[in-house]
Image 1: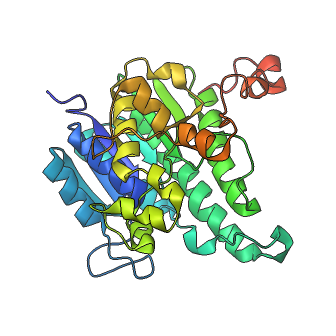
Image 2: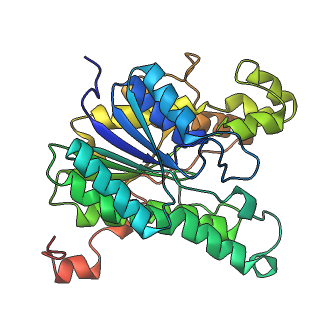
Length: 317
């Protein structure tokens, strides 16, 4: 029996990249996976990218799970509500929610100071990559509360509290980390765990194309950028999610941010090619200084806030 056989998952933003890797690796572990996004066959929604949610669902099937493609714009509440109603009708519950909606690559302007950047693009990035996560969780969590164990994974970029080089981008990625923490506080009396997760240097479909390589010869991309040699395929973060979902003690990780490479060492999984890349170790070697992580000490000031001390029973649920 596969570790996630019989488990029901929703990967919001499963069209490509980390989302596709997560959906397909949940399928590899035996899960039923609802794969959502806006790009469907004959109706692309993201520039000229060819990937579709139907393709993702088919890979889930091929890996041994059951993939269900559903076109959803997660910024439209009625569509999110309809999706969750369908899952409730068809499955009766939801066990795993992965919020991977992004859509900000074309909106991020690295280089210029924030006062020289487009406020409209920044607002759109925030709406696409933060509001969609909260809206999806708002409608999906009720499906998870009656189960034996639930998991919400917020996909971010980076497992530290350091600045990410662009104010809008930093705000979005840190907001997702904070969203996982905030949900964990409100879910602390339930069996649902919320946490955040980052991949390393991700070899997404678009990244491979930008480097002029394929997954088969990806190492040749290091000639263009030496750091590419420490990259990872989307399967790596996918196997991280699958390992978290199969861990009966995952609740101990509630509220924190984790990385694919650290979880690989903890749980013993590998990337699709059998390797076990570790971005933190590579960073320390390449830059000659430690890779700083948002560990338990970093989270100390986030706990026992005035509201929690003054009103320990809030929220009531």
